[in-house]
Amino acid sequence: MWTSWKFWTAWFSILGLIALLAFGFTTDPKKVPSPLIGNPAPDFEISALNGAAKMRLSELKGKPVLLNYWASWCQECKVEAHVLEAFHKKYGLATEQIKVVGIAIQDTPDKAQAFAQRFGKSYFLGLDDSNGNIALDYGIYGVPESFFIDPEGIIFYKHIGGVTAELLEKQFKPFL
Image (cartoon, rainbow, N blue to C red):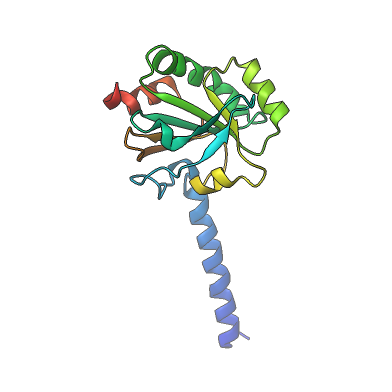
């Protein structure tokens, strides 16, 4: 048995799999680089949660955009909700320097609308389709995730997890 090549092949295969898994557990998923950085943001059209308007991302060209993926059931999204709204009021609503767009994924219209009302969201909020096509185009694997898009429509930064006021100010500083 110890001299069988099949035994040693199986043993080394198992050890290799264990090593691969161990390496995977040491990688912080929040630091996985996005292949979209440096490339044009995938365009999409989305209806507002309240159904009153539609928006196409390409129509926002000329202004930097903060694109935030969220869900009503997401705890970290609740934490960042006030940060996003304050940022929008400071740079979007008051001065129109930066456009803030939120897309709810894996959510229902009623729950997403209730979340928006609870947190006083005033920036454009939409709901991804039932297949999650917009989120798939951006490679979303969890919420919250945010994409920072320059005035030319190029993604220059991606953040996984809740954003902070400091992070938003730092990333958008060149455009203010």
